[in-house]
Length: 390
Image (cartoon, rainbow, N blue to C red; front, side):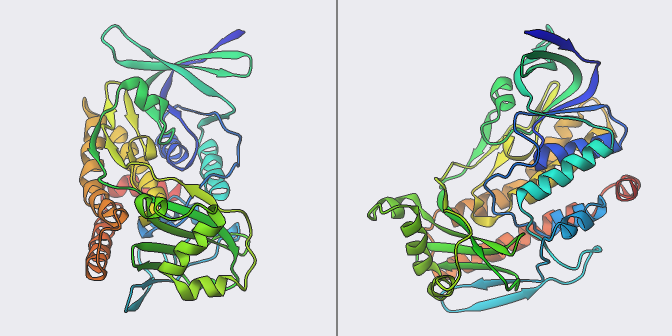
């Protein structure tokens, strides 16, 4: 095996999906020398609810990437409808901060747009490259990485190594990142794409220990998920994911289930088995974590991509500000914006709520999302203008 030594980088990022690519984009636009490594192939898909909340759409607009998302055929979402046991409430998406609609792009669309933008900004983005370890100095500070691309061994040094490598983050494991907060419950979600010719907004259903969502995405399709607790699902006969998906839909949204019978599925069901949410330590000497590597909560609130883009910008802002504890400032802000969302998501994922309680949880979720969106439209105006015009 040959060894390739590379020049020193300001930042090396493990993972080139939405969290890692967005971090690379923003840091490169700030003038940092950035290397991004991802073991997967460029443009691959991944399991996702796809939905972008207002904060994420505002960020993509400000970064100049929203036209590419819309240009890829991602339908605009102009309303969100909540279906509870005895009430239906529709909320229109009002124009604000230059955004007139929400979007839910397929990950092969969004992640590729972010990776291309990072490259255009000057980041060195490499797919098909795996990390094999971290380099440290005598004091234990992370100073770089080792990796492998085919038959080539890679060694590179950096001032900061960022783990954006998902729930099973090797960077988090290697630095010993501890979970400061752990969710009390997790749900089981079954996803399926269906043909969907009416892009009439996001729809969320909550009823009788079950939930569902309809999320219009690319190619004339919608991602339809059905969710319940692991305990409820285990207590029923196992007849496969198709049957379980339909059975949960019948409980959460019987009218929706009937309508979907008239449309053909656009792919097989995919099961998210339920994984415990966590808020890990996100920073230490020479390292930081963004996206699911540092913060993962149950997908029932469809908020993961929004948080990933948020964390990318918080970290880039902290690095731009500099100082002896820049990454510590990043973690403090991330935690402040995350905890309320994390806790209410855990309560919703428990499915231990009544009709009145789920309404209260949804109200608190909306308030927490509004706080997050407000935080992402404040901050340093000079940096905001620079990022928007780049």
